[in-house]
Structures are given as structure tokens and as C-alpha cells.
Image (cartoon, rainbow over all chains, first blue to last red):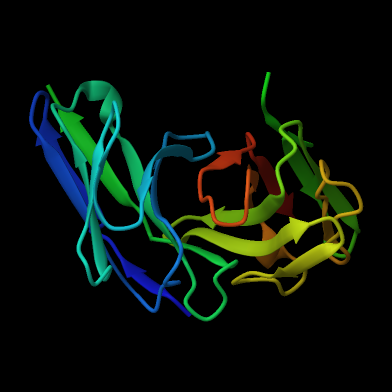
Length: 111
Length: 113
């Protein structure tokens, strides 16, 4: 079974760049690594996904090294509304249709 | 509007009384999942379905059943609920098997007394 590790919490200030790293092993070799954002009482919301190297969209960047044993979500210039829990999601290396969420990182953005 | 719907949103029941939580998506997605979310444990996959009549166990399938008779619907069945199944449940769907951009429903908060 794939295993993932994320920091439990992080603090930041408005306008700063935040990087959240997820370590993962035994993940599916041909599957995306994906990140989600979740606010209280809501379902997770897709942020970004990638396979290797760097992917960027309008809200975040995702860095994945060649060995795919980790991934780093980068949020540029965070605002108060980015306060949320962030999860990585990977496919299981033993059964790639099975999906494994990380334990989540609670990000607090202060004014 | 593209969405995943779940019903009921809130449910309080008693041990042993069979219940079904419905999930429906209107995006013609192939892959659907059920998750439970518990404090300190994050989101854990219960069951998933790759297509109609094709389902498989996720990380925590014990005590649950699912079916996928139609592409749009993926109900979660608790034949004999127990208090340790008190949790927040989410249904999700994905366009294809290798696409992890999941669309989540609003959640069902279940309490089993």
C-alpha cells in the first residue's frame, strides 16, 4: 500500500509564498500526483496535478522530482482565503485504481 | 450544472438499521469513489468503481457495500451500521481512470447511535 507523509500544519502571512511537501512511496508508476484544497464542511476541491517535473496553473505550481518520491505544492502570494487543509493524492503502487490521500496539511494564513 | 449530489446530507440512525446513501453525477464520468473522513485520519477510500458493474475495495471497505448498475449512480450501503461508522462521507467522480481530478459531492454526515 502506498504511504504518504505531510506536515500537520503550517503558518504563513499574506503575500508570502507557501510550499507544502508530501512524501510518498510505493505509488503507481503511471498515475498522476494530485493536490486538493478543503474548507470546513465542504468536499475537497482539485488544485493541480502532474506526473513529473513542474506543472503550473493559475493558482499553484507543482514540483515533482524524477524519482516521484515526493511532490511540492507551491502557492504564490497567499491570501487569508487560502487558509484551508491541503491534501496530496496518489495512486497505490499495488493497485493503481486505488487512491490514497495524504493526511492533510492545515495552512493558516495570517494578516 | 456539472455536479455530484449525495443524499441524505445528514443522518442519525441506530446500530443495525440498514441504510443507503445515494450518490449521483451528471458528467458521464467513468470512475466513482466513496470516502470517509475522520478527525486525524484524513480521507480514506472505501470503495471505487471503474465503470458500470465494476467495483473494488479501497482502503477501508469493511462494513460497506456498493453497486454500480448505472454509470451515473453509485450508492453506498451499510447493511448493519455500527457506531464506528459514524463519520463524514464523500462521494466523488472522475472523468477517466488515469485522471485524478475528482469532483466531490457535498458530503453526508452520518451518526450511528
